[in-house]
Length: 308
Length: 259
Image (tube, rainbow over all chains, first blue to last red; front, side, top):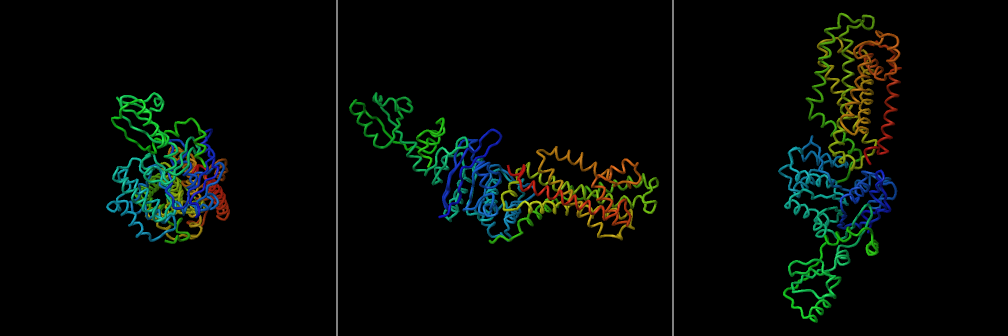
C-alpha cells in the first residue's frame, strides 16, 4: 500500500533554534496516527512542512508519493488540514465559508457534501450565521468542515479539541473515526493523551525537534510503562523497597516490568509473612509513557531502540 | 466531485469581490463621496483662477478625470493591501495557502479583484461628477482611457499586494499608503497640469509613474495631454510588467507568506 505521508531527514531552523532536527517518519494509508510532544517540540512545524505552509531547510516530505514542493498541487489536494489556531474570515457565513473553501480546491456545486459535513458537525442550525457570531467551539467545527470540503484522503488535525467541550469532542471523534473507517488516513496531534490512546494505532513522540519514540500504541505501552501494583499492607519486603513508586498511608504503588514479576513479589511477601489486605494491578496509560519518555534528558538506549 | 481547472483562482477572485461588496459603504460609497468633496471644493475655489491646456478645457472638467483616476488607483491599492493584511493578521490566510493555488493564480485573483474595486469606484466617481461637467460624457478616446484605467489599477493592486506581503503590522501598510501612494498620486497632476509647475518640478514629475497614468487617462477625455499618450502607455505598461514579475517572484519564493 502507498504511504500516506513520508518524511525523511527534515530539518527546519528558526534563527538558531532547530525546530526540526532530522525528523523521519512514515504514515501508512488508512492509519490513525498520533503525533505527540510538549509545546515547542516541532509538531506544528512538521505539519506545516507537510501542508506546504512552510519549507524545510533540508530533507523531503511526500504525500501519497508526491513531493510537497515539486508536486504541491497534488499534495495539497490530497491533504485536509485543521489548523491549531482558531481562525476564521469574519466577512462570511458558515455556508459561504465552506462553499468558498470548496471553490479554492476547484470544486463547484459541493452542496450535498457540505450539507453532510454540516450535519455531522452539528452545524445545520448555524449554516447561515456569520462566522463572527459563533462560539469558539462552533468555529472549531467549521475549521474541521473546511478541511474536509474536498474529501481529502489524508486528514491532519493539529490539536483539534483544544478548548472544545466534552460533547463536541465526542461527536467530533465519532465523525473522524467514521472517516478513518471509510479509508481516510488521520494524523492527529493532541495534548489530551487519553484521546491519542483511545484513537491512534501508531504514535510518534517528538521532543526538541527529534523523534524520540515511534511505535504502535501497544508496543509503547508495554515497552515503556510496565505495570503498577497497588498494594495495601503493613509494609513492603526490604528487597522491594527500591521498586516502590510512591506510598500513601499503607498503600504502596510498586512498579513491575512484566507480569512475571508479580510472582516474585508475592513470594517475597509470603516469605516475610506480610499479610496482603488488598492487591490490585493497574495498567499504565499513555500519559505514563509520555512522561517517562519526555523526562529522560536525551534519547536513551532504550528509546533509540524504539525509534525504528 | 472532480476539481475543475481554473475554478480555484476564480473562487478567490469571487471572494475578493464579495469581501469589498459586503462592506460597500466603506469600500465604494465613501471614496466616491471623498472625490465629490474634492471636486466641489477645488472647482469652487479654483475654477476662475486656473487655466489648463491653454484655456481649452474648464478646470472643473480637467479635474474630473484626475479624480476618477486617483480614486481608481487608491482603491485598487486599498483592496489588495487591506484584504491580504487582514488575512495575515487574522490568520485566515491559511485557507488560501492550503489549497492547490499557484503563485500566478494567487496573483491574478488578488490583482483582478483590486482592479474591479478600483474600476467600480472610478465609475461611481465619474457618474456623480458628470453632474458638474456633463460634456465629459462623450469621450473622444475611450479606449485610451480604459487602457490607462486597467493598467493603473493593476499596478496599484500589485503594489498593495507587495505592501501587504512585506508589512508585519497595519501601521506599516498605512505608512506605505500615506508616505508613498498618496504623495505620488497628489503630485502626479490630479489637480493641475504639470505645465503650470516651475521647470524643476516639471522635470521631477516625469520620474513619477503615476503622472503618466493620469496624463494618459486624461487624454482619453480631452484628446489633450502633457506628454504623448503612446509614451505614457509604454512607460505605464513597462512598470506594470516589471512590478508583476517582481511580485510573482516574491510569491514563488514564499517570502514572508510561507515561512
